[in-house]
Image (cartoon, rainbow, N blue to C red; front, side, top):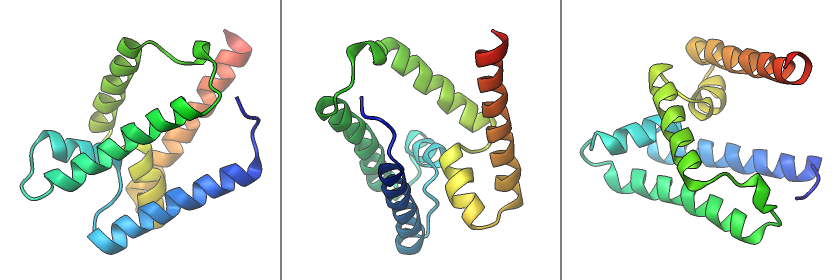
Amino acid sequence: MEDFSPISGFAGGLLIGLAVALMLLLNGRVAGISGIVGGLLTLKSGGGIWRAAFVAGLVLGALAYVSTADVPVEVLAPLPAILAGGLLVGFGTRLGSGCTSGHGLCGMARLSRRSVAATAVFFGVAMLTVFLTRHVL
């Protein structure tokens, strides 16, 4: 695996920010994954094609990365674990009324109070999890 590089992190952040901004400016829609997938699963009229293309792009992008990057096999989880994890994350995002991409990228940029609160909770729980796994367990 590659070492962390501030340049690659910065470039990735710029690309994600650009994608989010273009989605909002060109389509008038927030690029929150839980909302996109939720709309795909409930078959809202008129949005199935772009939602399916968005999700397919996420999956194909991940597959392209794994197939071309030097990722050790032991880092990859078995497919059933990946699917179970995806379902649990999806359930959690619906339960929490949004996901990190929707709240952290789109909602924060729009100064949504709900998104600021949600992002603070996401980061707080993440910091607590790291502390517990590294120093307590």
